[in-house]
Structure formats: structure tokens, C-alpha cells
Length: 176
Image 1 (cartoon, one colour):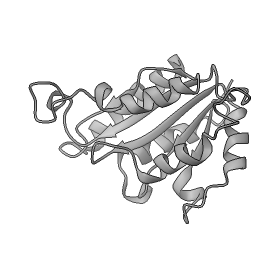
Image 2: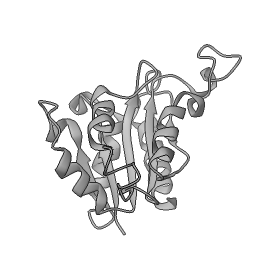
Image 3: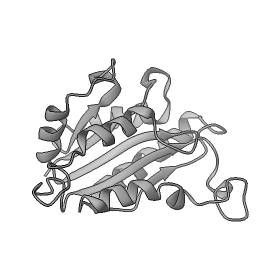
């Protein structure tokens, strides 16, 4: 079964790692369906029915995005608010259309991993900071999986550093 990778990057042309991941995913159309939200919805007017129909077709869904201001890009939050509707994603008569689907996050981060932690600059681990996503997907009975994170892009955006991430990301996707 193919994996749906929903890419939420507001400036893909200037991205380094997310663009590289997308290029790699596009080499394997038999394994991955790439869905770029900012490309599909440049006006940010989401076609809720189309998104719900798309999600229903996949058992594995990954949301790929850059992490900034300790959160996701705004279109991802809007997508969650509009697509995960009562009566479709949750509610006693919804059928929980996302129930049992494997859901994961794939996140690129500017700073180094060691900067996230109780005694560090950012005080919390990335897992703690992304807990609202975990709770959201658990609430709709999805099978939320541990996230994939690639750190240090702000300080090391060399081609070598970015290439190092590609097999790690593919291994993560294939293990879902």
C-alpha cells in the first residue's frame, strides 16, 4: 500500500531539506503519493471533501513540514481544523474515517537536537512540543507513530548534510 505524504512548506522553492525529500519521494511513485498543500491551495481555500476523499484512500499518512516558531506552518493547522470534521473524523456517528490509519510527522528543524530538552535553551523535547498533534490524531482514533526529525538545517545546510537525511527519511517511511 502506498504512503500519502502531505507536504506543508510555504516556500518550497527556497527549501533545502524538504525539497530534497520531495524530490526523492517523487522517484518512487509506486510507493509514495506526494501532496503539496501550498501548491494545491495557494489561496489557502481547502477543498475539504477532496482532502477527506484523499485521506480515505491511504492507510499510511505522513505530514512533512519545517518546524518554526515551535509549531507547524499555518496551512497545516488550517487543514486540521477544516478537514478533521465532526461527523467524518470523530463523533459517535462519524465512522471515524481516519481510525486505524498510521499517521506520522516528518519534521525538519533549524537548530540542533541537543538544544531541545529540560536543561537546554528550548526546555522541552520535540516529542513534548508536538504532543498536541499526537493527541489530535489519537482523538480521531488514528494510529499515531513516533515522529521523524532532522535537526540542524540552519547551521548545516551543506549538500552532504542534506543527503545524509535522505536514506534516514526513506527508512522511516518504509518502517511505518
